[in-house]
Image 1 (cartoon, helix red, strand yellow):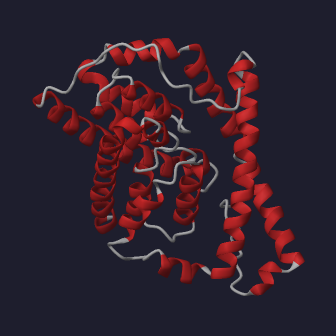
Image 2 (cartoon, one colour; image 1 turned 135 degrees about the horizontal axis):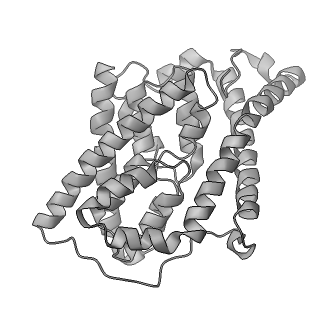
Length: 300
């Protein structure tokens, strides 16, 4: 069973009381399957970010040419915690652009968690992660090599990193309570978003939605990559839903998820003095997402 209700109507009956109640019930049941994965993911993230953040920072600082490789692996961890952390480290000059791009490209936000609940989830997750790892490594090292040739791979230490947790979770201490708080918040968002998407797809119809998203067209990855820039989990949830339902191709999904760095991109744009540089990073991300997305769309 997918996170989208499999029985989709194409008329206004979906907006009757019975239709809405049925949608809410199925959305609640399907979204509940995500809870264990959400909590486990947040436990790992809280531990790494709050208990081992200095070690991660030290690891990046001494990584050198291994930076993009380490960044790629860390970015694979569900949620956008490491994209936020890497954006802070890049803004502080601790990591290179190649490492930042590698983290952003490998970040998958809620997608891994959502795919874990579907049939053949293990296969889909493995295919997704392997593909994104390859893409992140290739482009991360291409950019890193260009930086070295242009003598831009400098690092400096900084103790003035931006705080990215605005919910006050860090004040609670420990990792269980913050993980629980994040789990509840994300679960609530996922539930509301799932209900909204269910109702939208029920009203529009899968065939019409596929047409709007250029299904079967080589231009689909271009559109997906733009959607991926939405700076929260909404874009990754939407793209994953559409992929599960067969509206998006695997190549289009990859294109959208490669630009989906979550709140990490927002952290970069908080520094208004580097606006032009950040726009260039957006352009680089778009190209790094669309190129492999088109290739995969055409040949898979």
